[in-house]
Picture 1 (tube, one colour):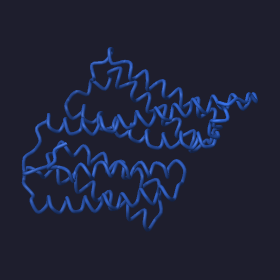
Picture 2 (picture 1 turned 90 degrees about the vertical axis):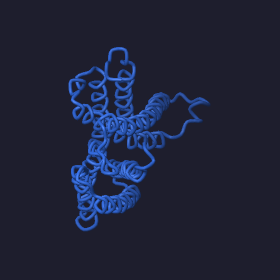
Picture 3 (picture 1 turned 90 degrees about the horizontal axis):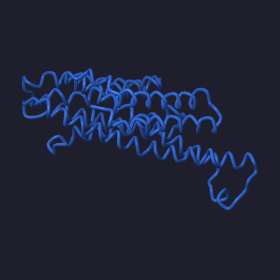
Picture 4 (picture 1 turned 180 degrees about the vertical axis):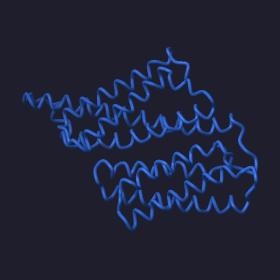
Length: 268
């Protein structure tokens, strides 16, 4: 992204990191993750406050829309922090900040600097960089998770049949593998969801909504649905580890199908 917009970029990426920790708390009710997520959110709020004050001081008539949505995102973050501090309604804090982050990212279309609005191609470039950054990190995390799920199934199969070997002895415990696979999901799923949300709204704003019916886009959302099903089963239903590992592998296969359909897609 442009160096002149380094603070806005920093707000976006730190916000995304904060949401990852909040998602970890959502999955496992982790106090440590919640504290880190809240600390990062406070830092984001401070940066947002400073950025908003600076923009208001240097306001320009062409920036009214940008300032409006910037203030909306700031207020949403402010209210979520108040709720977190005084009312302890955890889930609403997470969901409110997902909306706030989305507004902040999509606000790139309103123009950011010097009283000059972005041209559509400039805004698209900014969002494309954010989209690619998020989706690449998501793919890496989910790939690691799939490898761990495969290790879990292999080790579970060997232990169930009491087939000991030097390879089995070198494996970590099932609990350890399961814990790290969950962490991969905690990182990968929110990143994938945020990247798809940015891509979707970008297509709508650019007037290319028909591309939402593209095979690659549809398989991307199908992959996300599979991973959300995994998160639901893991967090709410508390399924056995080997069943969750199989669901993880199925979700990853859907993701691989998405990656191998470039030749059938006009999206990118």
